[in-house]
Image (cartoon, rainbow, N blue to C red; front, side, top):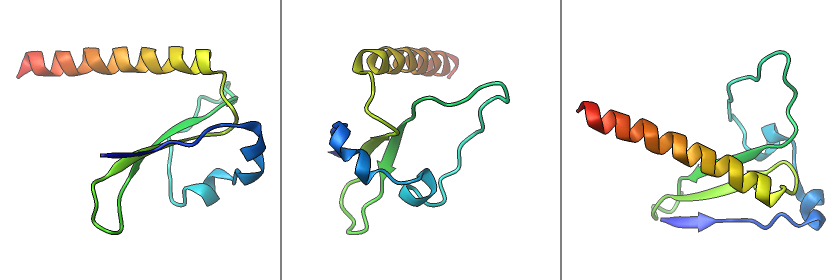
Amino acid sequence: MRADPISDDSEQDDDRLPAEEALPNLRLHPLDDEDDWDFAFVMIRLKSRQGSDPGWAYRTSSAPNRTELLGALQMQVDLLRRELLAEWGTE
């Protein structure tokens, strides 16, 4: 598995594209009507056109607050771990 990280230096803001241009045909579940988005972190599973192993990349809407992002990711990992353990327990 390969990884394609990208640093989030403020100088890269000029390289950012609208989501529909950066990831054509990407579809997401909408937010609730009373919510507005502030920051996006997108995990992308890569599919190689040359037949090599799949990989992962991430992209952000702006430079993240790394401490806040780490906390949010840790929470998601914990939730996923609980869901997987629950699924394995029912098999």
